[in-house]
Image (cartoon, rainbow, N blue to C red; front, side):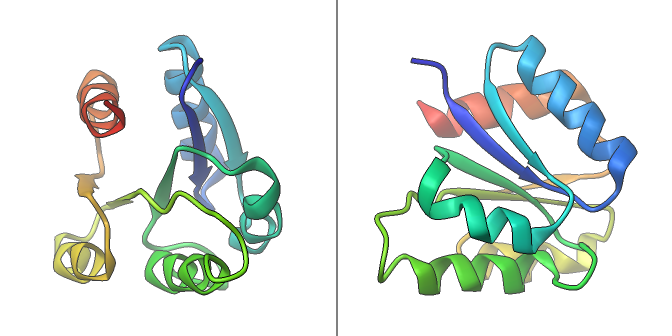
Length: 121
């Protein structure tokens, strides 16, 4: 079975790029421009991993991940997450909240696939 990744990124061009990269690498993706939409679908789609932009509209990535954790009390959710950001100063906060990795922007597509694949093994 192909791994499923939910991508939560509020910059459409980057969201589309990440979606394309993962589909071409053989993943199933659920791209979300809105963190609220991703939260609404979380209990239904139950992805293997979340790739979360730290700086999303209306809700930063850490806030989003905390809301996912709150939902885990009511639903069985796999809460593996990787954060992505252009701001190095957010790295420790993302890792402290439970992120398994932190990917810097700009990113190399092959590096992103390699790192995500390693986490999903």
